[in-house]
Amino acid sequence: MQTAKRRAYEKVRQSILNREFLPGHQLKEEELAEFCNASRTPVRQAITMLADEGLVTIRSNRRSYVTDVTYVQMEETYDMLAFLEGYSASLAAQRITPIQLQELKVISEEMEAIIIDSPEDYKNFLELNSAFHKLIHLSAGNAKLYELIHKISNFSKLLFLKFGKINFAHNKKSLEQHRNIIEALEIGDAEFSKLQMTLHTESVRRSFKELWRKWENKN
Image (cartoon, rainbow, N blue to C red; front, side, top):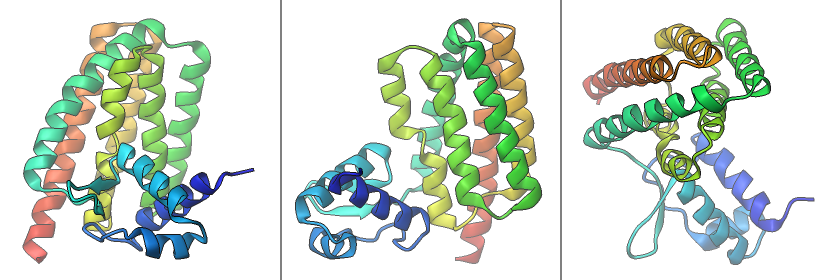
């Protein structure tokens, strides 16, 4: 049975990912308590959990907002992701299990099914993408590294929240890159795995830079 904190977390999280609460929207505890049919304590705990995911920003005045991002933050974050995810993949190549490799293949197949059957299902595509990367970073076996990556690995979701979409044209390329990462992990080549992950991260960065330019031209 879910706790009140977990129920509040799930409800607010889904509302954010459904873009019912847009970037910059202030999340007021009293309003969310009514929205979640809960007291303010589990709502406050849920907001903290969402902040740990990066979906919510808690400012110095303790007010909470759905996270919005700037172009500079995007560049800085992908600088970090390219380095951290590449290193994590190199560790994973030496430690990943056959079961985890099979799970990566299943996730990749599910993402491919979305591209074919529901190409505009951006939210589930991103959730599966997060699961793919999370599994690799868990298999790396470095708790501190995982903690660092976890704080910024949801950045693509923040960009989706800002734009209301992702670059669909890049999704097929992204899946091809995922398959290259899996192949590198399967043969246990640390440097090749690092290279494939870094290439993937940089490709995603370029995709979002293109989307950002189009968004700016419309606003």
